[in-house]
Image 1: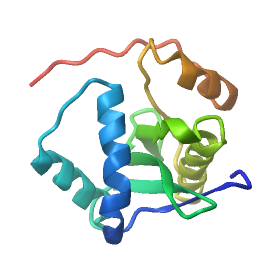
Image 2: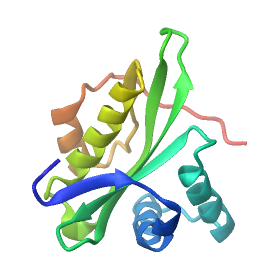
Image 3: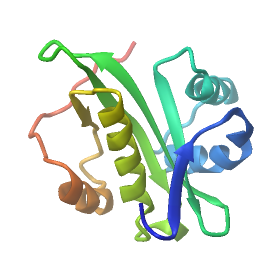
Image 4: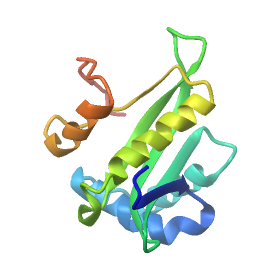
Length: 150
């Protein structure tokens, strides 16, 4: 973590701090979700009975400036679970402060503490700014993402 950013687990009391970051993330990816899906996502992130997790990056004045979500799943090439870092967003005003790196480190450390075989994520090919960080903290695998919409 940087000297100006701390990362802590998301709690049920954090909805109002998390929501603008979530909305900024959706806007960045030009995506709209219903309020119902947004609320459901948040509730899963703070529910200890799910395998979904969330954290906030907090700056020195106590403001939430970034958020990350992740989940675990078994892997067919490992006895240990994998950690999929699903969503990562840092407010424009906090980019370049180390908040993104601190959020990734938080997920990596969580994975280490829980015996995960790896932490991985996807990003848009056009997200060149984030890729500058990702290239410094992780290895590009060369895989291409496909999906079938349901």
